Length: 253
Image 1: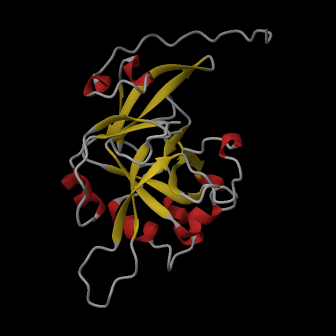
Image 2 (image 1 turned 60 degrees about the vertical axis):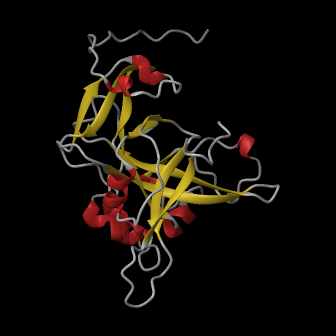
């Protein structure tokens, strides 16, 4: 699962990492949550012969994919993650997997260790050697009943590797820079041609840093939420008891 992440690199650093010509200025974001706008990169239109321009474009999308066939968004769940194991066949993601694969730049993500079915200790999980990482993303443009269109997206997840599994059993799919072009190429490559990229990150790629519960609240958006915290003891197992959006998605700011 990936329900919160951060992008604290500069626009220039982010553009260079994704292979974009440039990006408009934006602030560091330490606590990005579902329904908020997220930056994604996807393949651009076909280039003219001999052109040296980059074949990628940036988009701001609402984090929470809405398939084109949805009639009433109020009755549809918030799809901010997509399980990679079934994304090719699942109706909600099938079209995006074929036509609109994307990259989601991030400085890292947050995950919570589950304790007794409840959200427990939060961790800031970042590349061990610093820098940016690109998650595998999907984009779908949803046409609202009134006629306006909204770009929406989701992050693909996979079974966690052993570095992360003690915290959570899922993690976002990481696309390495050497595979950017292949993942984004929806004109020549079908989902079956890139399915091998949907795998857990290599061991030791990420480091998990315990942080305070400040990250639990979306309203907390400063760097203090990434300050190292203290990990408490593992809680004892609780015996089973009897059962007794945000409308600002079109601005990065």
